[in-house]
Image (tube, rainbow, N blue to C red):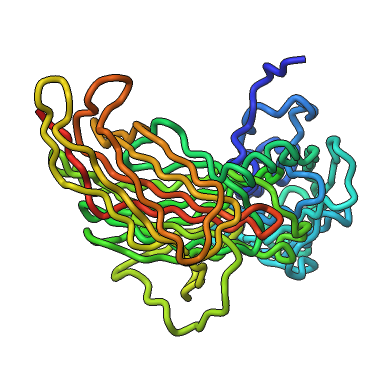
Length: 430
């Protein structure tokens, strides 16, 4: 049955803090407010369909079965500073610091790091009570000494990548949409925790780049932000969290990837704002910790799981070199291009899954697939070359084109994959 119930945004569910406001007694000369509890909470967004819609719910978290959720609970108070204790009624919700005697007060918010371990929990709504007790409320004129807060933990079944799709990605490599935004390189490919991604890209103007990896079966995407990048070429390495860090099995699945650039103002006409020169993803090779220089003025942002871009070279071999695409300019005479464009690339690794060469048209802020060729498998040292007739659907493909090379291993050989764009563009014009 189709579910039409309103959804709570995952970002809010998984990272939003719980804001609690203490209600204190007024001075003796004023009327005392009729408070029903020491604590109140900000309004909640619409609950998911599995959750009770009762008004006494102070916090609701959705977590995948078997995953571990980490996030803050923030207590604030309008009272003078006073000591309270905070206790959870469930073992699967715990705090990462002692909470028997903690201080909260006016302009002194209390931030508690909470952990919800959904290992062994059945898919349903689990209710947890947080008991709060004030140790010295009389000295600060609090109206109540105890309070209970209701927390709902919505455990959902993890989704996994179907075996048929894993086989498809293993046989045919990463899947790139026929049309892409020029500033957002998206694709679907194999994924494994503990992998690293090495990116080389170029920005036409200063800006920022965000890598988002959304693995199947994960409630939260992995998000990495790098800000303050200057115009020009950059090399950045990202290390994905290990399976042991997230308490998940070390298995190969699939994920959606996005590499998005935001620049300070539009690029000049006919200039691509963002060019992904190369990407290598997979198990990192042995790497030194001193051979990675972060981009000048780069400011890594927070990631969904608390990981930032690696401060080391991840060392995933690209395995593709000497990508060429020429000539730079081809004229159309009559209704036919005057020449063909020649392309080639060389493999330095034995990609047993194969490789693909795509000609893509960059125009109007997008990248569109024009022509494609596949190679079943590559041997180390093998060179692939060919010609493109500069045509699309029976007519000349006018505009600026680049060659995109994909190469990959099968899932049985680890699943590593690589992308490489040609540095040269071929412009077809009348």
